Image (cartoon, rainbow, N blue to C red; front, side):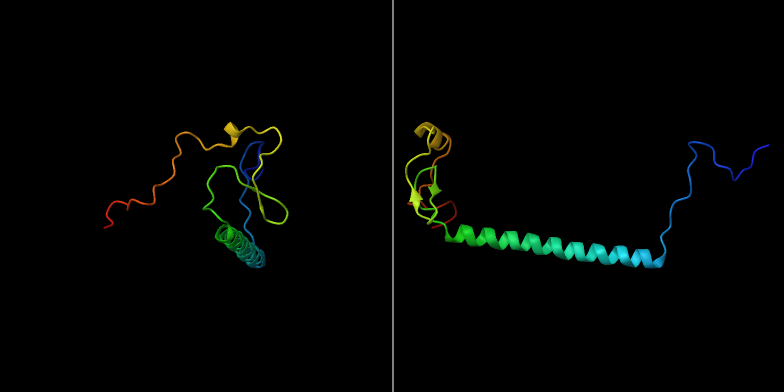
Length: 104
């Protein structure tokens, strides 16, 4: 009455098995994608390092902005109050005159 090879709705079909050429092409694409992704991560890291190393973090104050020439702008943007630009109350600067624990 029914053929065993005939699939009924909901029955699993055999898994697709790629041939050698498809596997090589997929592996090649994955390698190139990995190389490009690693290069992007390294590029972002280098740019971040360069930007942070050239910035002047010794300035006090929480709000910091620069103009097109890279010079500091001390006035707050329109609509921002000094309370909004101030650091959070639980954020205190480190006292550089005292050595850290374990240092003579």
